[in-house]
Image 1: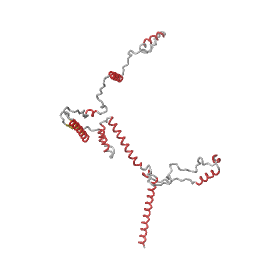
Image 2: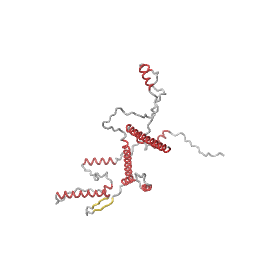
Image 3: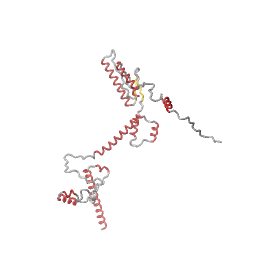
Image 4: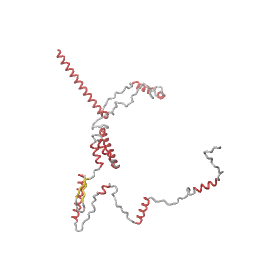
Length: 319
C-alpha cells in the first residue's frame, strides 16, 4: 500500500495571464489611490471665524461690548468681594455744598474701613439698603504664613518633623510654589550680598589727604611655582647663540656679569597668615605684624626680668 502524503501538494493551474492580473489589481485600487476626496471643503478654525465676525461687525458699525473690562488680571476672591463705589450723583434738591460734603463723608468712611481691614485682617461688609455693618475674618494667605514660619525657624535650622508631616498631606498650588521659590532665591541673594559687603572694605586702599607715596608697593611673596632654578638650562641663557655673536662683545660681557652677580634665588619665606589677615592690604598687614613683634619683644623682656629677679632672690637666700 502507498502511504498518504501528510502535506498536500500545490495544484498547478498553469500560468495565469499577467494582463488580466494587472486589470484585477487596478480594479481593486481604483477607489483607494489618486482619487479626489469626497468632501472638498475644509472647516474653518474657531479663532478665524471669530476674527471674521469681528471684522464684519466693525464694518457694519456695531459696538463691541466688553462686560469684564479691566477685570481679567484680578483674582477670583477680589472680583467677588470688590467694594467699588459707584458714581456719586447729585440729588435734585441738594445744594453743591451738601453734595461735596456727602462725597467727602463717603470717601473718608471707605478709607477708614480699608485701614481697619488692613490692621485687623477682617472684611467689613456694609448692607447698602439697611446700612448694617458686619465683620468677617479674612482667609489666611498661604504665602505669608510660610514666609513667617521660615523667618521663625531661620536661626533654629530645619523645620520640625511634625510640621513637615502635617504639610506633606496638603500639596501646594503651582502659583504659591512659584512665589515661595522666588522668595527663597531673593533671600539667598540678600545673604550672599551681605557676606560680600564685609569683604569690600579690604579690596581697596584708603589714601588719606596729604599722604605721600614714593614708590609702588613691593611684592614680598611670589605666586606658586615661581621659583627660578638656575641649574636647568633656560632659553636665551645659552652662550653659544647666534644672536649673542652678532651683538657687540661689550653687551655680551655685561649680560654675563649681570647673570653671574645674581645669586641663586632660594625659596621665598612665606608669612603664615590666618583668618582675614590674608585679605588685608600690604600696608595694614605690615603695621599689624610690626605691632605683634613689638608686643612679643616686650613679653620676652618681662619674662627675662622676672627670671633674673627670681635668681637674685634665690642667691640672697642661699647666702
